[in-house]
Amino acid sequence: MTNHLAGPVLVLLDHAPDGTLRAPVLELLTLGRRLGSVHGVWLGAEGPGGDVLAALGAYGVDVVDVLDLGGADARLTPVVADALADLAAALGAAALLLTSSFDNKEVAGRLGVRSGAGVVVDASDARVVDGRVVADKTVLAGTWTTSCAVRTPFAVVALKANSAQPEPVASPTQPAVVAHPVTLADDARQAVVVERQERTRSDRPALGEAQVVVVGGRGTDGDFSAVEELADVLGGAVGATRVATDEGWIGHDAQIGQTGVTIAPRLYIGAGVSGAVHHRGGMQASGVIVAVNSDPESPIFEIADLGIVGDLFTVLPQATQELRRIKAAQG
Image 1 (cartoon, rainbow, N blue to C red):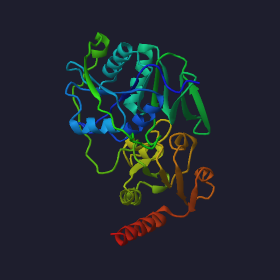
Image 2: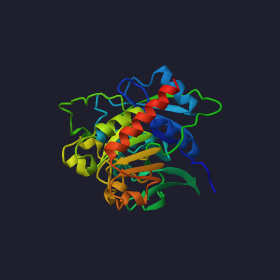
Image 3: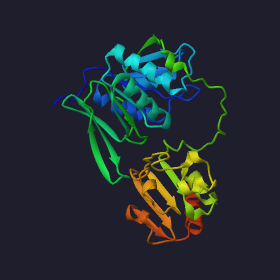
Image 4: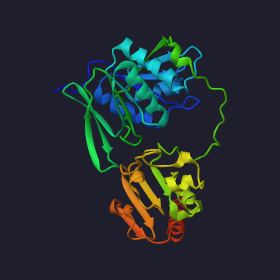
C-alpha cells in the first residue's frame, strides 16, 4: 500500500480581499500533508504577505505557486479552472484540494472537463490507498457514506468545511515562492464582470465555514430574531430551510439543503425545522444535531442527538439567556 502520492498535492489558498486566509484552508493543508508534498496555490500576481507565508509554513507547505492571471478576473470560474489545469499539468500534480463552496464546485467541474481529472465534491475526507486518492462523502440525503476511488492520474477533491481539525506541523517549513504567468484560452475570457455589489458585512462567520449553525424553518413564521440572537451568543452562523427562503423571510444565500449550501458544523441547531429529506441532505454530516420543534412527529427528531419538543420562541430565548449568564459569570 502506498501512503503518499508521487506528484505534488495542490491546495487552493482561498483568501479574503485583504489577503488573509479563509479558515477552511488550514483544514485542507492538514489533509493535504497526508496525501503528499503540499503546494499552496495563490491566485493574484502580488502573492501572499509575510504573515500568510509564516502560517503556511506552520502547516507544512513546501511551495507556494503564485498564479499571475494577467489582469483576468479571479472571480470567474473559467479563469480559475484554466489556470489550475495548466499549473497541474506543468507540475505533474497528483491531486488538487479545494473548499467545497458554490464557486469552487463549479471550478472543480470545469477542471475535470479541462484536464480529464476525476472529481469528487462535498467530500468529508481524503486519503491515499494503493497509490490512488480515495474520498469519503455522504449521498442520498446523508443516509449513506461512500468511499470514492479516483482512477485518473489527477484527482480533484472539494472538501466541506469542518471536515478535519487543523494541525500545524512540529517543524515549520519555509515555503519557496514560485511565480507562474498564466496564458488563458480565449473561451476562459468570454465572460466579464460588469458590475459587483458587495454584500453587507456581518460579524457572523460564513455559513459554509461556521462551526456552529442555527437554522430557522417554517416554524419561525418569518421571525428569525430568536434564531439570530442564539447564533450571535454562540458565535455561529444563521441558516434557513428552503421554505423560509422561498417565502422571502431570509435571503437565498442562507438556504441549507440539496439545492442550497451543504454544511458540516460541529453543532447544528434546527428551530422550527421539520427535517425534510432535501434539507437533511445538506446538514446530516453535522457533528451534533439539536432540534427544537413543537411537533413530536417531525422527521428531524429521527436524526437529532438532542430533541426538544417545544415552542422555539420559548426554548431559544431561554437558551440564549442562560448562555449569556454563563458567559458573564466566566468574565
